[in-house]
Structure formats: structure tokens, C-alpha cells
Image 1 (cartoon, rainbow, N blue to C red):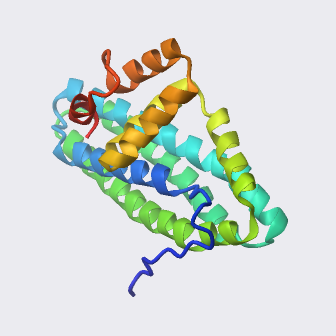
Image 2 (cartoon, rainbow, N blue to C red; image 1 turned 180 degrees about the vertical axis):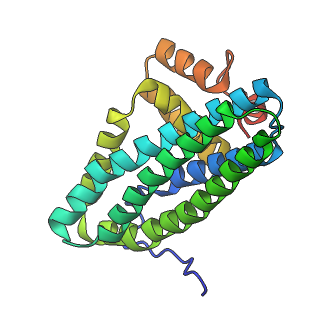
Image 3 (cartoon, helix red, strand yellow; image 1 turned 90 degrees about the vertical axis):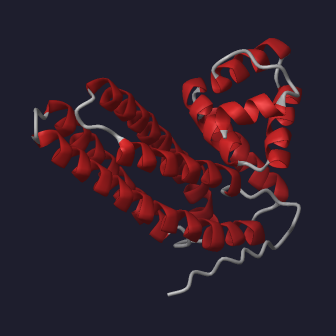
Amino acid sequence: MNAQTEIVAAHEDKEDLYYAVHKGLRLASARMLIALGQLDPFDRDAVAAALKQLDDHIAMGMSHLTHENREIHTVVEQRLPGASDHAGEDHDHHVEAFEELRRLADDLVAAEGEARPARLRKLYQRFALFVADDFKHMHEEETEIQPQIEAHFSASEITGIRERIVGAISPDKMVLFMRAMMGAASRPERIGMVTGMKEGMPAEVFAGFMQAVVGQSWRFGDWEELEARLC
């Protein structure tokens, strides 16, 4: 079955609530899958680092679906009953997947000797299945729910939804999101993101936030260094 990839916006000037964050999540998922696939199950330090990365990835995913449920699905259902039912069911399945992934990660940590490769393989395969489901889910949100939002909500209402989502994200999770989103963005998109944050934050807050995202002090305008660290 061919997926419908054309996204038709009802109004070009309305924000897309999914595009940037979904690009970031796809990049983070791809990197996580590669990390698990390349992992040496007998290198306990490497395993610990990869499972910390997995824990951060799950935390970011949980934050994302929680905010979508509360700030997008709720308002969509009020205006268009039933429009987000399937997406909500997918989110329930995501929570189940996260719980299973955490259990499989614990199983890997507890395993000894020759049991470790099999435990890692099981974790890798389960994560790959989650990624496949999640990519399909994100495509459906972008091509089915977003056009309905654009058709039935004003530009200011859509901006308000995005602002409520951003305002509810804790600083530590915002760092995770921005690493992924900036890494996945094109250069013009990345410059626009960072420039917008610089204009909207006090100078010291912006500098501290970017240092947390990049992992070291960063000078505004050094796009090559930003890309070397994030892309």
C-alpha cells in the first residue's frame, strides 16, 4: 500500500504543529536504533551509556505524547468529535511499548555472560518495531489531523496550542527536544529556530540553554560548529 505523502495546507500562514518536532523524533529514533544495533553487549560501560540514551528517548517520547493528548487531541475532539480517536489509541500502544522497552533494558542489565547478546537482540528488535509503528503514526498525524486543524482552527488558536505545549515542557526535556529538532532541521530551519530563541530569551538564559543543547559554550552565528555538534 502506497502512503499518501502530499500534505495540503488549508492556509499557508498557519503553523504546522507536527513538522519540526516529528523530524526531530525521527532523527532521534534512527540514531537510537543504530546505537542499539552497534552495541557490544559485553561492554557494560557502553551498554550503560546506550540505555541512558534510551531512557532519555523514552522520556522525550512520553513528554511528546502527553502534550499532544492534552493540548492537541483535547481541543480537536471538542470541535471535531472522533477526529483524533485513532491517534489516541496509538498513544496508548506507545505507552505499552515504552514500558516493555524499559523491562527489556532491565533484563539486559541483569543478564550475565552468553545471555547478554540474546537480551540485546530482543531489545533491538522491539525498538525497531516501535520505530516502524511510530513513523506510521506520525505520518498519519501530519497528513490527517494537521489538515483538519488548519481547516477548523484560526492561526491564533494554532499558535496558542503550540505555545501551551512549549510552556509545559520542562527545561531538561526541552534540551532533548532541541538537540533532536535542530539536528534534524535544514540549515535555514535551524538558523530560524536559534534566531527566534535568541530574540525571545534574555541573553544569559539563551547562552545557558544553548550551552546545554550543544554541550559546550557556543557563539551565536557559528553555524558550522552547531552542525558539527548536533548533525
